[in-house]
Length: 333
View 1 (cartoon, rainbow, N blue to C red):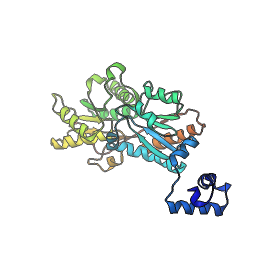
View 2 (cartoon, helix red, strand yellow):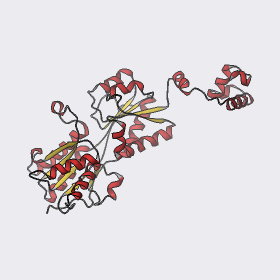
View 3 (cartoon, rainbow, N blue to C red):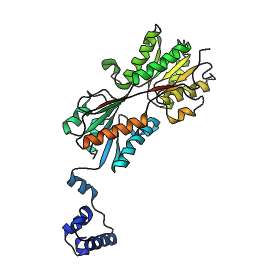
View 4 (cartoon, rainbow, N blue to C red):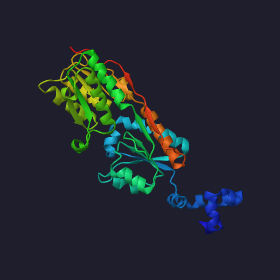
């Protein structure tokens, strides 16, 4: 490349990295030679030399196919992507490698991570601390060494459960996010733990406990919401109201009830949690808890950019939720 342009290797480097250090004519000659040869600079080499990638990673708790099936992540990544566009960064999705999130960390060439839905006492957070990689926690418990963004999961779940109880429902079922295989040892944690605690709060106000509720723990897919609802309705005491801890699970519940010939909400009420875009035009329009998903993604990326620049003071931000009453819940028949 340098020989073709009749310049030194240093001049070629300056042409692509520090053009102010050579004349305009020399730079134009080098760029013309590069175009003729089909030459492009080695981006990876430049990143390694500079010690930065201009990329942030989103460390995901599930396989990519499961993540992309859930529209929640599309909204979350929209918010994070808005910050990347503004800052000139790229966004790298980092799912588990051979079913291990920990193994995926060393292979992601990023300047920092948004960590989604991982418990702080697991090895991933300790590994990021050890490596000195900036990170922000989302949908997790708080960690004093890193920024954290959450929503008022407990308040939102309490509000929607209270609404169903005030309508008169006493036979409730909860379609819960799958807590994983170790729940018996460690209990419910993170957003799931907070949402179940909110439901327990509302039940206590009505003189009930979680023992009075049918709890189905399933992966967050529409198909699993459908399957779990079929099983609940086949039981000896089918619910009059189904409270989904995600909108996606609520969609599956309505699919199952419709197939069974059960009217929603005339026979069984259904509620969700998230307020995805589809919930406003789903039929019946879904009563749900709105959380600011795009804002959460945008704030997480903003916090991470501050951490990468060394500006971060480890803020903890809680975003509010709101009950959105539509058409999918009414008084029990």
